[in-house]
Amino acid sequence: MKVAVTGATGFIGRHVLAELETRSVESIVLVRPSTVKTLGHSRCSIVQFDLHNAPPNAFELMGRPDVLIHLAWSGLPNYKSLHHFEQELPAQYRFLKSLVESGLQTIVVAGTCFEYGMQSGSLSEGFTAHPNNPYGFAKDALRCQLEYLKAARPFQLAWARLFYLYGEGQSESSLLPQLRRAAERGDQLFNMSGGEQLRDYLPVAEAARHLVSLALAEKDIGVVNVCSGIPISVRKLMEGWIKENGWSIRLNLGYYPYPDYEPMAFWGDPQKLSSLIGEAT
Image (cartoon, rainbow, N blue to C red; front, top):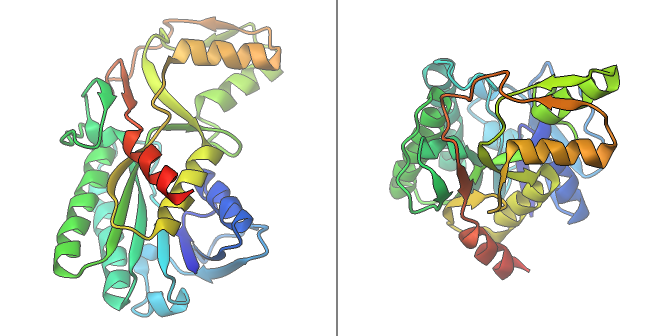
């Protein structure tokens, strides 16, 4: 089986490639021509072009993969930028449509929990999407476009709604890298929000395993939450990181306001994911 991966040099992508290699799967990696990062995976074939300006024979250049794990999306972490639906959405759909029309049979797309909008509590795939920021809106719009495309030209789609991921290689603007830098500088305090918001956190390596399992299943799965199903407060999470690492830094709670684009308490319902992963093992 051939599995192509976009966004392979990113936070999630590097872990997806590592997981594919452990399963002895042939990987085709799509990167921009300007990319200079080395991937370091022996089974990877590298194809260079920009999906925003993909050539007509993109599917052939990618080696006619059986499955695409589609992680690429630019403009993050600025969730409120109009770029997401003005530039990114049309380019993404145009690229994926061209691959389907050329013969691609299965696509696994990284969606986002922001598609649920301001809904609270345990969120299942049966909830209607109500995104309230441009990023969540653009992602959900792409999902809808692909569903319409699938009705006209059948292919298998898994829409993986990712919740909060952490681990090696994450953005330096994320909480854990910020906290680590502050602790290593010897800062006494770390400024943050009140920390009482409940979130669903999952190690990125575990999320990568789930994404690869969904890809190798080659099924028309539809929307599936990739999450832990365990709510934890941001404060408790960060206190745990401080304790695990033996840092002496203290949290300066309430310094920043809570984000206005997400509810105070929400997490994913993992039942569908658990069922699918159970079937694959």
